[in-house]
Image (cartoon, rainbow, N blue to C red; front, side, top):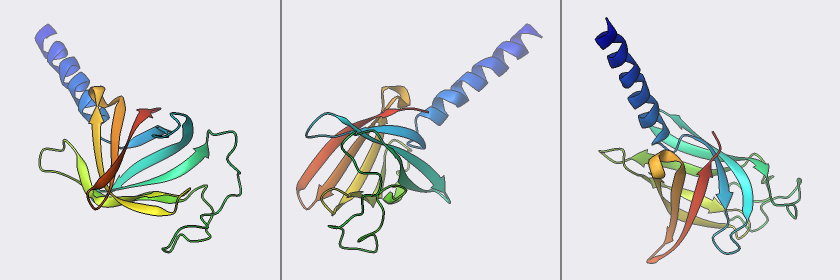
Length: 144
């Protein structure tokens, strides 16, 4: 009986750890240039595809009614708050990283190819955006 309970507890703990090793959740974004907290982004999964939207601004200089004036796609002149900035990312075969989608920097209006990689047991998320051979990296911190 004790062995069964121990096995169930270990299985539950392992399942919880695995669940945290995905990008799904709420993340505090850290700007790669200023190293300041910028926003909270919630990443969700539907049908094996990830998307992420801005839930809250953390930067005190950000305007609550800001729109993406520099965006060149369907997000042009739309409110940044609530905007989907991550689209169409899918897991690799081993679920070690997610890519194939894109990420928008609404302050610059630039759309980058995307790679997401959970690190530090899922407590942090390496976010890499590519345009051609050039890239930007950010490390986001899990909130929940």
